Length: 236
Image 1 (cartoon, rainbow, N blue to C red):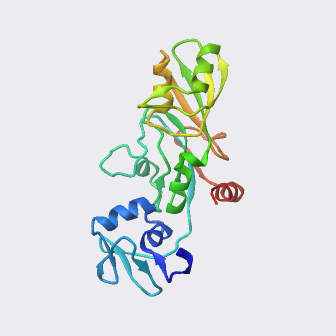
Image 2: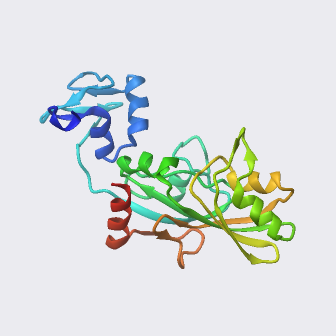
């Protein structure tokens, strides 16, 4: 079993260092950019105490204090750490630690985004099977009828699949609140378009136990100890 073998898997060591997620670590290892004690690392390698790990020549430490940040992402900012994207969210935040966004919120949308240096939680949060809720406030260009809400809740055919059942609550003549447990590409916009409506405003207000609260667009804060404990407990 994993916990009976000596040392720590190379990708987990990299994630624990705060450098990247496990998935990103696997990619870097496959590209030959990771060295373990002076040799090119391989998937499945284990790091024993005293071994040196470098990425592109930069030394990593096995542990670092994990950072968890909530940002109210403004419209126009792209949820990527890729420096080739001039409007990437990491450069926008300009945090001194190496952090990356968990999941995506499309460029034309705003609202709650979690950024972290904890590579361990990324895959656990994004697994659809986990049933992790995300809540949004949506405005469309036509009235929100009972039929529209019922069809949204039942599941809408998009992207060669049918969306999972969700919760929808009308909040105004042309606005509604929706709670999803999956995150297909531009899911809410595509669901609305499939039902003959266009989204004019979309804001995420909750991710699991984390709430947008009074954060204004562009503002950010670190998670409280209670929020962090509840989040990690729900992912354990």
